[in-house]
Figure 1 (cartoon, rainbow, N blue to C red):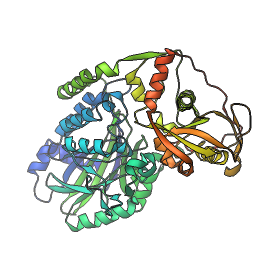
Figure 2: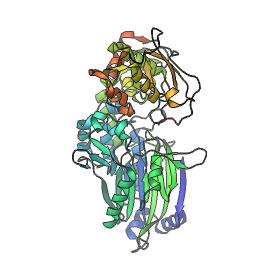
Figure 3: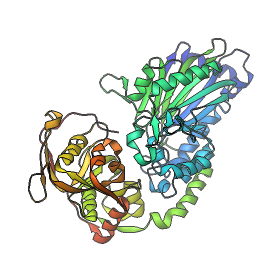
Figure 4: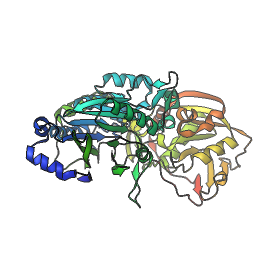
Length: 523
């Protein structure tokens, strides 16, 4: 299904008339008279998260790539292919080879650029550098500043300039400032993620001064459509309200389908997992020296009857053969589904934190809801499934915290509109979301039924991401005698499955929200 959104003073009629008159977009660009309007086609994907294989609603990279290639064939000299970030991490098919397969596929599709998403940093700088070396396209991020040099990180470009159909197009990359706490602090702690609008305005001025004719902002900024008002809201919308001279804003991060206009700027976001492609047609008038018309749509995939690209199928096939011995290893079985939703204390979250607490011999365990990515269905559990559940290479980290600090973590982590819900074990919590923030945690009991003592010191296990302040959990950094066990969380859960053979876990009542608060769920 394709949905269209029209805008501009010449609009779709101009493009239709010109297309019919010339017969093809390529001919239009090549044979049109000097000063005639020129069409540019910009294709975008975002938050692919390694969804290489066709499965369920995911079309897989071979069909996604075929669609993009076919779209480019309609305007071969005027098409730009872009990614708004978070392309690599998220599936066993990608993670087991640290994104190599996705990179090869993007090279085959001939992407022109990607902006760094927060998950591009998940495997550390060394893996990211290797990935960049394998890529035939640049990684952008004009607002990613190295704290040591006060300059843009040396592996990232602030922008690129591409000439298409004789028109120079500047593409400015903007990472989300949320990267500073939604990626591992030990990796991104060396960078500052500057305010987007200030950065964009600076580079727009420079590029326009160099004669660049069209400006595209390729961002990993989130946005969504307010269901009551139809208004586009979020950090991308706030950027659009604060900049001038931008012809198109491509977004990501929030996994939404968004197309519309804010402050006169077309905005588009194409869902996630390759289930959609953003398409923007811009008409540039050399006479007016401006974009005079724009039309955006979101193409929903897979389209019935669509075929896969042979070259991309071969890339995926080779990778599947390489990882099969590991991915398909059976660890055990699950008697009933361990469901997970990062915005609640899930069954999977309860089971996982119980395992963390047992493995570390701790009193209390905490895990961020976003660190667990999907449920574990009933039935066979494989290594591949565990990589899907825990794509991050986080380790168990032990720290001593007072009861008062434990309550601080609960106050911050329960029903947090930005990060979701903290998962926990070893305590029973009564909560009332309607009360003032400092009173919402009504009571906390340990497993022996005693009230948590604010002055007593407890042995707490979390993951190294949270221990370093990830997701904003800065209280862990104030704890004492902290140390990394170097036990990967994925290994701890995998060993538990092997040991138990059949997981028979049921949700318990360790958390009760006596009057739930109303909040926007984290994406």
